[in-house]
Length: 384
Image 1 (tube, helix red, strand yellow):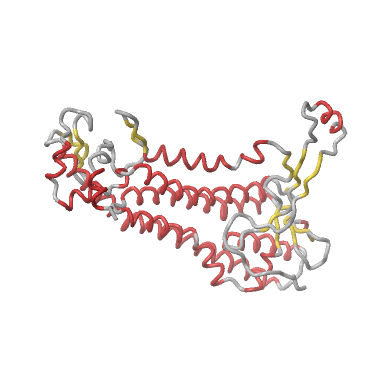
Image 2 (cartoon, helix red, strand yellow):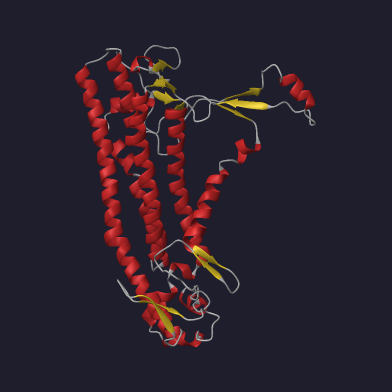
């Protein structure tokens, strides 16, 4: 039996869908009375979401192969050798993708992030020692010496004119610390956090679709249904066994969520230690290639037949029906608020004469005393 497919793989993004949602008034028996009781006289609207397509990447391929091939095995269609071979190939690509991502993350932390953290700590230590005329406390001695000025920027020991006692290299190293330009750095971290939040949101919606909203069945025989009623057309994953839901959660969804969270932390740490404004932008772009690896492997190594099968496989929507409400139109903005809260809590913030240190461990006990001193230096060095 040949399963028809349509279209080439689309670019990465949230779960794609070309179908149209049904929007209409409520049709329950109480809708008329509720409408009359409404002070504004408006009829309540409700959106019924259609089935959605899987992302065309390694994670979507693994979900499609696992459910589609085990369903075909259950109904005894197709050569079992081919079915098991595709499942094995799909999960080899999945585990290969996860292994490369984990390896790259560990090496970025070891060779890239660690070196940047080491250098920026030395630069800030020299700045503190000179600006406070040696009136410092030793915050840490290993792995690098970290001294912090007594009293902070508004204290009696801070001497702004000592900035010119620093060498040109030390001045540049201090004034290019990302926290010396907090608004610029906050914006860069916010954009990077949104990239990671997108991945987390997709993972959450996959969990709701596959685990929560998909009916549980005792066997994979009834797992798939013809979505449009045409034999050989698109299929929808209508039911899954408990075992299949556990496998999808443990092997696909949780690893994707964990890697994204770890990459968010490593990325923020690396960016905070990046002692160059131009490299700050370049590094934030470079970090995303680890997340894009799932798309690269899919487009480069997945057979055309498997791509067509994935394009013809849909799942239940994360929320089958959604009544018209303020949350329906503005609720997703909360992802941006979560990203903003994470960035603020991670880097900390400064008020008028006071500051709050964030969760970051790159420059521990940061005094927020570089920005004002470096204002003139920045104007001179970045003037055009």
